Length: 242
Image (cartoon, rainbow, N blue to C red):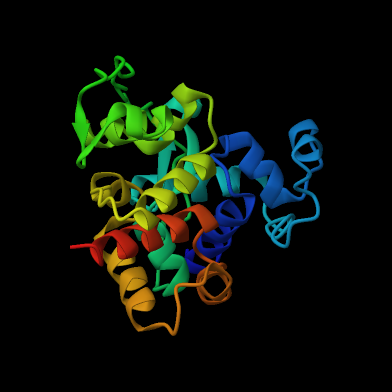
């Protein structure tokens, strides 16, 4: 069966939902079923809500499994193995190619991924230098973020442990870029976006008239989440500090 169109719908639905999504919630969304969680998250007014209602639950379970097994989706262990599109999945949605699956594709439950999250940082010593500044000269949260990045801690895991939203962590990173403090977060963007998608976005920011987020959202908002575009812009801005 040719499943290109359905996989594109699935990935675009996940991008539109804009959060790690449990398997059943995703199926309910594709089927246009106003479940308790659909109502709670107010997903019923999204563009792709019900876009797969001509197929049944088993069909979408198969599509989800197939997309996962082919690297187009990933699981987030810290969110009870909720699903997100991978960089390859977003690339597929942007430039789809033929994707054939057997008509009797078995439905397999995916194994949980094991993620070990480093224990959060100890208090930095008062006299420690960070980019030429002592701890007393920088906000405590900035120091903790810099230390987390130095240890290659996933930024979403850091945000969760600190009781922050990822958008708040991105606010801090943008401020650090404005303060001309260069940090290497590519260990995280490589996982979230991948090389090809990141290179595409860096090339966009390099050649755009400005790095305005509204313009970036108009260009790429149908495929990339705002947080992903902000991450790419932060890398672009910090690369300019070399």
